[in-house]
Image (cartoon, rainbow, N blue to C red):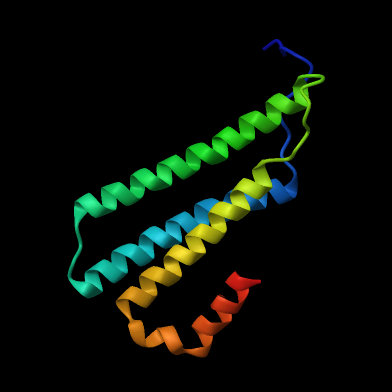
Length: 127
């Protein structure tokens, strides 16, 4: 195999790898919590799951977009910006997924809304 170009498109840092893993882990966790809560509420709908999985696919495409734009910016001189995108995009999506999990749990078990555990997450979200 003959290498083409000056090197790899982009080399991920350890932090970027962890950020990407966190996105996929929280997405999987959100899907699992959604299915369990739907089964508890007896309102499992494949159309709702299909819509949720579609949203997850769009978020994955956003991570891919950040990856390619960051790689593009590394290899094109005088582009005008050199902003790392992977970590901020992944952190934002991970926080969205955490909020989604908490919302789903609260909808299924409203008694938890006033517990110290949920108050802890509310304080973290406001910070």
